Image 1: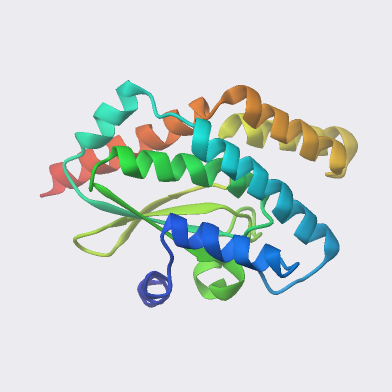
Image 2: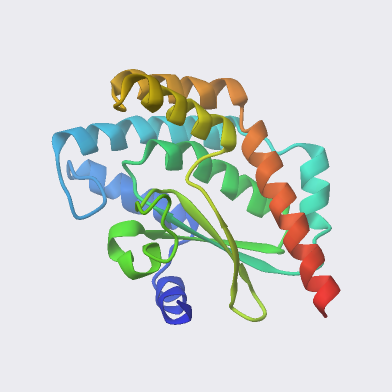
Length: 208
C-alpha cells in the first residue's frame, strides 16, 4: 500500500489543477475515467455547475476553522475521485475549503480513480470502488492513518434505505441525494471530518 500511495501522490493534482483537467475534458465532450459515454459526460457537466456554485458559496464555520488551524501535526488529504461522480462534486469543494482554513496543516491532493486502481483497491467500500475516498496521511511518516467516504452518514443512510425499499438505485434517488446535500449545506461532512482529524491528531501526540 505504501508504494501505491507514493505513486498516487507523485501523480496527484491540486484542487485547481483537478478542476482544470475536468473542465478541459468537458470542452472536448469527454469525462474523466476509462469509460466514456454521453451519460457520464452529462453528469460531469452537471457537476461542473455544482462545483462552481459551491466554490463561491461554501463556507467553513469559524469553529471548524479555528480547530483546523489548531491541529498539532501536518497531514496530506489524498482524495480518489472522478469528474462524473455526483458525491465528489458535492464534497471536494468542502475538502478544499477545509484544507485552506487549516493554513498549512493540510495539503489537499486529488487523483483519478481509474488511473489508480491499485490504490483504490486498498480502500474499497463493501467490496466496491466507491468514490470519493479521502485518505488521511501523516505528512511526516507518509503513512495512511484513516480513510473516509464515499459520503456522510445521512447521505449513506438515504441510499441504503432507498435500495432496501426499491431494490435499485435509479434517477429518483440520485435527485433525492443531491437535495440532501443542498439542504445539509456541508454541515454534516464538516463535523464528521473534523471529529476524525482531531482524533487522529490526538493519537499522534499521545504516541510521540
